[in-house]
Image 1 (spheres, one colour):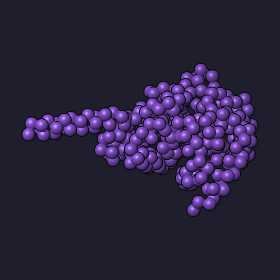
Image 2 (image 1 turned 120 degrees about the horizontal axis):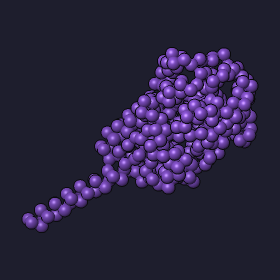
Image 3 (image 1 turned 135 degrees about the horizontal axis):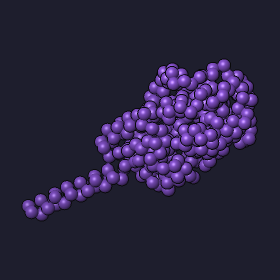
Image 4 (image 1 turned 45 degrees about the vertical axis):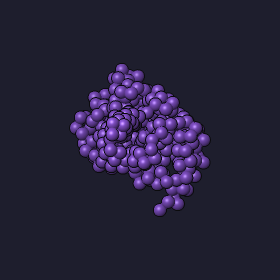
Length: 327
């Protein structure tokens, strides 16, 4: 009887220890550059809550806003090495690993959340996702997170590409952003997201190209006068994680993480789209002027140069064909 009791105690202890190790093993730190008031942050928290519930607490996600985990390029290199970190990024950065992916952040590539959903189903995108994971260690969980259209925000009105001549526009440090902003008429100036306010205040840049929600989130109405509705990018965000870490998860947990990332992404994207009109009213009340009579055809035509410079014309046409075939 004593031996049986000892065996039961031993098995119980092993079960507790295994459960404890499992909980620690499946803890994911989830970072982004936006502040806690941004809808994306709320979306990440909802995702984390749902993942925890569906995995009975075995997979914990801790969300870190405002670049608390570090500079984006450094974080991406960490997760490539297997560190359990996830990050909210974009195709421009991912294009530095798999060049074709950058096309998603090229000028006027997609125009709606519905088109982004079709994009997810294309064989070419799926091929690039596989290459990114297997060759570079970056697993894409979802790219259903759409922040909205990016516009040029300046202190002088902009209606044509010529109006951007000579203006130094803050641009994220990636080739597709640089080539696109230059093709559209401005002087691209690489700068981290968190430095935009100070850069505008000190005159290091003359403007930025951002989505509407960035304005109140960063109090940019204090240093900018105009939102010029060029709609040159539909900002599609990618949620990425270490592929090595992802593969270490039980298959059921992998499915949960992908499903909940897509679910929260679509919810957040639609919420942001609905909020845009309210944000526009807010920035106008704060003194900014919205320029709506922009020559979009001139900007679309100018933007084609970016595809040519980065040799992405074939990729553009191939994906368009694949999207047309999806009902």
